[in-house]
Image 1 (cartoon, rainbow, N blue to C red):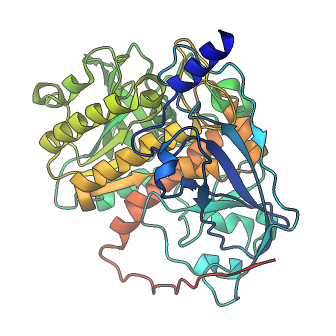
Image 2 (image 1 turned 180 degrees about the vertical axis):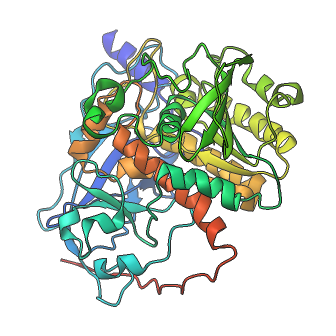
Image 3 (image 1 turned 180 degrees about the horizontal axis):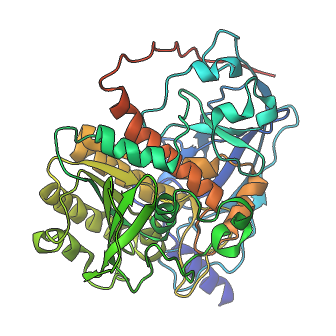
Length: 467
């Protein structure tokens, strides 16, 4: 009887329709033996009819893209089998995280050499063009191994390492410079007048991003970065510049490059404060994604009567996926997402859209009450579906803000440290880096619009061979 119950429980777990052959959740990394650079290898089910069946041999393949000179060793784990990673159907969740280590042949190493003339060679990094996208792939590097001064890259450190994109370089924006950019260059909306306005729909991660922006980077900086609310959950923190908690769903922020930002209206109530010479405005709607946990119907926020209470948008930021993975089944999520696209097309027929992808999730079983059903592959597949749908409907107006790639390329032990946060937020230093990614994607193209573009740098692929 017990065996029958266990079999019935296993068969409750099913794959997600977008990847019917993904029965097993695999984490695989190529790790540089000298540099410590960690490269995630995304495993895909091979194209074979048998892969849609549960009780058969499952075969996966992945592609390694390595651009740094080193000898890379392969390591990884199988987190779940038999689709147990997709725990949206069973009444209970796995209460233990017991990954199985993957056996790798001792000599299964890959040697990568990079010609000195290649754009991927470290000596040429500072000659790369500035990044103009918000989804550039990159890796974490020890600053001591770089052939240029540490301050030249101008990026926040985490765990003693700096994150560098492969095909471009991040310009070092201060938060003040970012706000000046919005006023001077009016990204994606150069012909309009008035204060540059962003409509931002997001969850806890967006609140943390805006805390950095409104405080001009002072929130959780320096020695304060080790406080619990800086490392993980800031939901109980009193923040003077804006409330940002569940009790306040709609906030209008005024910002300038000297004072940062302050809320001037919260839930329709005017605050007795303001800032002079504001350069930009942010209408921030705090939501729980496309789920039932919002204070009302999430659709209502896009009604003309609701949006009409705030200045017209020049740019729209949409953060979805984190709460949806946690509390919505995949097919219901796709229906809600289709409805969101229709509403966005009606409300913002010309504005550019920034789609913030779900945070990376790693290395533990879900937790919380009600339980948050986050998992590495669920987060990825929910995000991938949203990306494809938005690309189809918004085309060149879409900018994908891929924050997940930053945390996923951390060494595994540091990913485990980040994974200790039950609400799956990242430490404040990584929030700075995520924001820098956004600033470059928004401002660089706009600032270069009226200037000669830098000479394109030849993107020579690295030479890869088996070690």
